[in-house]
Length: 285
View 1 (cartoon, rainbow, N blue to C red):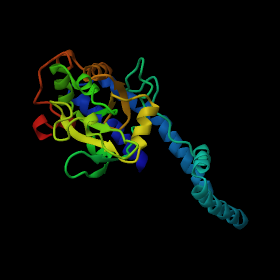
View 2 (cartoon, rainbow, N blue to C red; view 1 turned 60 degrees about the horizontal axis):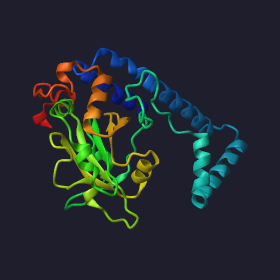
View 3 (cartoon, rainbow, N blue to C red; view 1 turned 45 degrees about the vertical axis):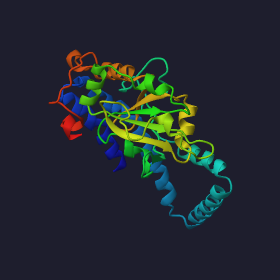
């Protein structure tokens, strides 16, 4: 069932963009190569688990049970060793990168094709809600996520964009969000992600500003060298690419989708009739 949901998540937004004229039909051919390797991995893991669960021989079943008991003990005493064993036996599903994948390419796009993490974050503002990061991303559209560093110097450079880029991103239902890093003392330097009560990017639906709660996002961003860059995350939560500004993200996306010139970033006209994801108008978002 989980694989079926992933299949639908991969295909639905592509169909939506094609039907609304923002993408060419050929992007639908990316569905099979993007899902094939993941499905094979999940199927292989299911077969492995089946062999562990279904053991008709009583002696082998007894040995299996003892090994499971010891593994639980090992996980508590030496989690790093346990993680190494676990990932060797059941490696994580592969990235979707392939020649036919709908991703940004070129220099600086090593992160493209990775599944975006979903750590817990704390929202900026008076309520300080603790929520999963998916809460600030578009449910059926693309999301621009600003990976804030300690300072706020990059905010103006990253968030500035042409009217054409904003119109294109808005019309396909793109949201914007900003995530500040976890500081060593656990404090929230709100300035690094901008002011909490203002839109992240003027002209786009704002998912909100937040900070990393436990350090998982901060570690991931620093490992991949994403500080003060924009991540463009696809509706199925895979990273399309990383960019230095909104205009670059919009141009790469329009080129990958094959968006007609009159609907792409070069056009400064906002099409209220085509609107957001799955046919919603901008007003409905």
